[in-house]
Length: 334
Image 1 (cartoon, rainbow, N blue to C red):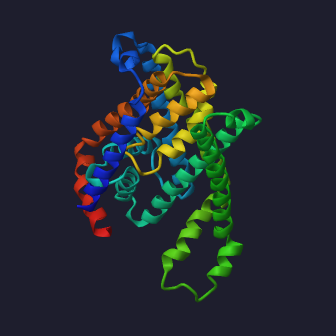
Image 2: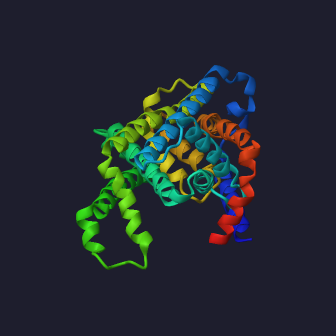
Image 3: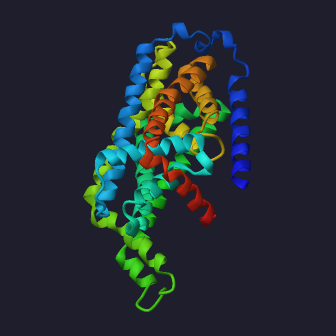
């Protein structure tokens, strides 16, 4: 019951954010009201960029799984990435994409469930590091120009500096705490025997320090994936006929992506549109109706289309039979 109440609250918040995004916009001026005027070539490019982004996302996770010694094929990792997206989008039974991916992969490696879970956690951290580096590179030398915007736009940019700066520090501290010279002092011989998992988690995390080449390649894959993913939204804006270049989109999307990832709405819908409406107007003078329409088109190209592809993969009997087990497992843990 609680999970459905939580989903209802997120749905209500998403609806309120969409109402705010469309407020003050004459829908007759929006490209969404005139689909025949959209440039579908740009939409097709957005779909292709979205596919490449998921391929690089799967490659990133595959490299981190290989570092843990888990023998999983790259195509299977990409499949799991796509299937996880359908869970993120529709929150089937209240199960998130990460829980679904962990469960489906752990069925093949039941003895390495903790390693699978940690690889996915590190996958998110690698994505955070790549997003932070991209944000700081894109905003380097432009701090005054970026801050001389509206109050909301200025607040969003400052949030990005604090969030990404703090994220990099937190990731570095996690590596320090998991290192043998710190971890060994915390868990000396004879201590923490009753809490084996407390000892194992830092040891599994420390694998990525020892196998730093895998982590570095995963970071490189993520560094390629991020601009490719953001390019889907650039294609969305271009599909409406607006002649925007890719750099303003790359500059703003890390902040937008970070804030829309907060678990307060359904797949960030509404939050993303409001942020792009504000930031794109501040940075480029983009009309609000173009920003909202381009954001929704980009989301459809990257998330909706490929989530549908993941849903088709999940309909296979071998995958579909796991949904009940996923729900039961999640319920038991809850």
